[in-house]
Length: 446
Ligand code: FRU
Image 1 (cartoon, rainbow, N blue to C red):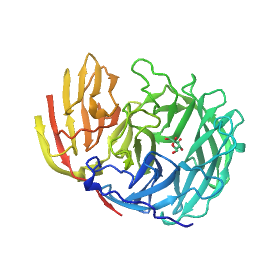
Image 2: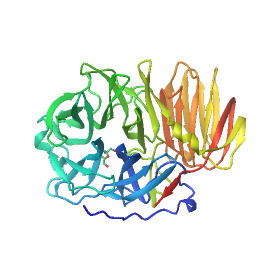
Image 3: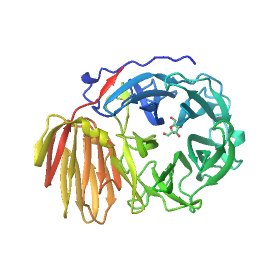
Image 4: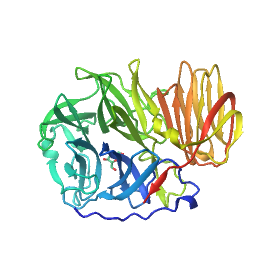
């Protein structure tokens, strides 16, 4: 298939909002990570990309890395170029089998004459593409259409994630029911080509109207369904607006209570892959349909999170920054107050006892008091304000700060808070002792 190399590369150093060690779009817009996989010694990170920085027709951009320090930007991998995906190569996944990369994605089709888009006016197809080298891709094969989905579903069925269990291949898709309840549907296959309906899973009580970007993983023998429910009402400090992300543990096809993962302003559509037996998750550091903004949004928008390893501890998922990021460390600091040269650093506060005050930028404060952990942002949030997490005890914080982003790992990663932030003050102050490392940026070969 023809590949186009239609990126216009940002001159990163000239852009004061550019990130040093987070993957940004080389131009335009980025959303969900797609097709994550370790293949022939490299990790491939595809992503939803649009040339229009405000978001538009979606295609798959493509980075790869061997060591998570040196990255390569590749030509656009998949573009809308057939009748089954003419309005967008939407999100999907990779499955590596016998030295072949299999990609599955949603082909989005909108009808000109019917703009209803929920019950009608849209097709959500599943397409399949293969690659022997991770760079050149086969022709597109149509594997599922709306006619193959259960009849109680709307036209919103998307984001195929393929996995294997006991020698059988499964594909999980997110769906919106006609009665506005979110769920996932599964297809099974013995050859990765022919797929037949297998089963449906949903929560015992409805949780939102649509579940996007599902993923199905195995952690220490525990089966886990991850997804992004849309339309869940905020309840006290649970369920942050606007859309959510999190997981259910699955036992005999029954879903446990939903656990929110990242409660930040900018985290959505995470996807996992397995590297050397480790389950690694990367999320989109962004959120659809919000009214807060990004500086420089006439040039580019959004980035991906750092890769996070998922582990199960006492029955709950913990997110841990991958070990490879240690290679970015280029200077050590410690104390209760420090001014750095820029905001590219990682820091930890261990053995936190009692209340916490931690100022990370001029008007960005993390605090813990009365069993509430708060992130409060002033103007530098560009519309992002406060996030609050009820927490019986705060023991540790690990923070990854980049020029315009924060990823906060609470109590060894039991919760995370990811957000973009726009303030270049570099004075850190706290009532607690902290230590950390200055991080250098990663390299991107174009
Ligand atoms: C999630 C999502 C997916 C869809 C993609 C389109 O952010 O809405 O459900 O496939 O983005 O870009």
